Image (cartoon, rainbow, N blue to C red; front, side, top):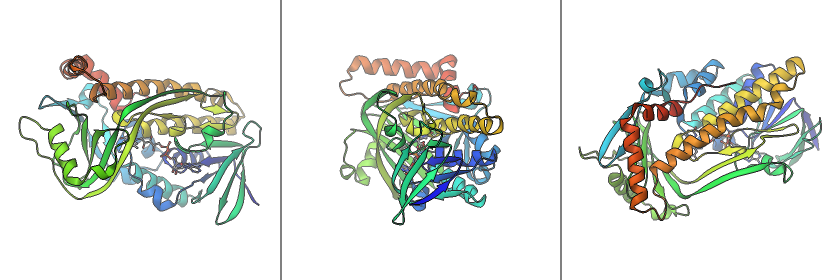
Length: 395
Ligand SMILES: Cc1cc2nc3c(=O)[nH]c(=O)nc-3n(C[C@H](O)[C@H](O)[C@H](O)COP(=O)(O)OP(=O)(O)OC[C@H]3O[C@@H](n4cnc5c(N)ncnc54)[C@H](O)[C@@H]3O)c2cc1C
């Protein structure tokens, strides 16, 4: 077995693992990232695209945002659409000057891989059989296979950044974690389309037939989402049906037209709220989707992953600089304060905008009353705005 050593072993080269490795490097701390998929796969995985101001500030401030500064779209407004009418909300004005940014997750992943490799960082792609060991001692280990060879990485700490379906969280002994979970009775059918959508705003539509959404990802790309059954088969959704359904759910009295184009990518996402407490066991620290999931309606998952890693990098930085463990000890509690706020916002947006099976006319009237309130009360609109652009970090 080939043995290696580093200070922090990181499982997962998604946004959380890569950013953790990058921030640790800025603190002078060595890390090695172990990833199950190929570099090409993680660089092409289409997912999030809406960034909070704090996420952008952190990426740019840490030197990983050069391309983001050039190519990202900065947006001031979103639009709520219901009853055939458009209701723009100017978030910048409502939130005291903060905006949100459109820049695709796979571009962030490419940028972070670029800065890590340029700095001599180590990312081991295509690792199989990854497992984590002895994290309740001072000498944790990560084992895996690569190119047919058995490998072991010895480290001081493990960053469990391997997403919802990873190995780190399930390796923590049963009973050590408390799980909070809600699975929603619908999913999102998402498409990435080559189309020059004229609208600048991100559009969220409530409709009797279910939720609809689109935003312009770049001058030539548009992302659409439609609420569908959680077990929906993609084969039931040829392009023509997707365009028809978008036309119905996003229709406006002033004759909005969907901008069609070639569908480059399509997938179905399940909708779930999930949190484990605490986010640490011994020297294994969970961050990002490994510890929590939000339904994508609030556009928060990637932003939360970034917020966790920011706290963890600072805590590890303090430990290596001073030997103190206070920030590591408070890591979970610090992150969970923000996580639960964001869990609430994401659940609230989801509940307001989706059809739930068995919803009757009473429930629909309540949703419409809530939407009317959000677009007519400055106080209600401000609540949405300050959560959407991202609340300030409170640590
Ligand atoms: C359709 C969709 C739309 C979304 N929209 C938004 C949005 O607009 N804004 C937003 O903020 N968030 C959004 N999200 C959520 C966001 O994509 C996730 O929260 C984000 O990817 C979390 O990053 P992460 O690094 O924690 O996990 P991941 O991105 O899941 O990365 C985990 C990594 O670990 C690797 N891995 C898994 N298992 C192992 C293993 N055993 N060994 C080694 N490596 C392993 C995986 O291959 C992956 O590379 C969306 C998600 C979806 C699905």
